[in-house]
Image 1: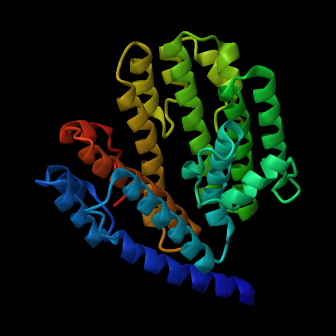
Image 2: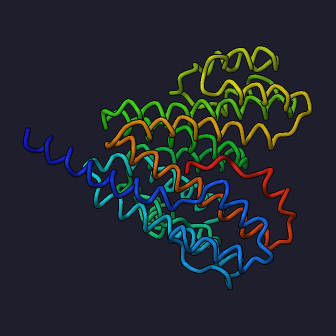
Length: 331
């Protein structure tokens, strides 16, 4: 009982801290000011009010490194403060699998692509893969790396290797979410899986591929069975109907339009915005793992938006084009 009271108090303190930080996060109005600022330097300086370091004189690569470091620091900080480490682990898992994909396909040639946000140090993972010794890795990660390497050796198809790692990644995320005992986190991971499967179905239909190809890309564990997704993928209207009355209803409608030649950009945005809408429900809960989950996801979305705006402006992309690609922001 004492431990539960302590966890409750810790969550209360952590949630209060995160709520205070939410007030400083990038919102639509601030993003618009960044897009319309006279120069990249002025756009970057606006971010200082959101808690970012001054990136006004940085190159695109330096901006990328600064944002990656910011994300890694945040995960470390929240992990130390959170009563349940599983909340943060759910977010770390995908970075391990990102690093695994990089190592399997490029060896040590693209260390610049390594992420420092995973559970396993990227260099340690590289060493495991190089020596074919996976005893120090989580079991599912180790097994999927071995299988992905085997698939790549047999088929020379990196996409199939990626599919294997993606299935393992979300299976592990879902398992950790269930172990946490939080319905909010479980439903969040399931929504991620449903979104990925919807995207796969739409892309497969646009490419004119068959259901057998789609099945290799689908991930089990979502709220909608993968067999139903496969069956519905033959018709844009049926696919949209499958997601009716779900959080992804609008996204599926955009997907049906994309299958018929509509913009993939609008569809991708609708998928991400649906996830963001789900996370906003955490605002109704005063404290707990919901607030932590929503904040971590929101910061990931914010960092993506910052990267898109700053690197887009550095590249000379028109503000209206960048605006089209921006997802809704949590703040």
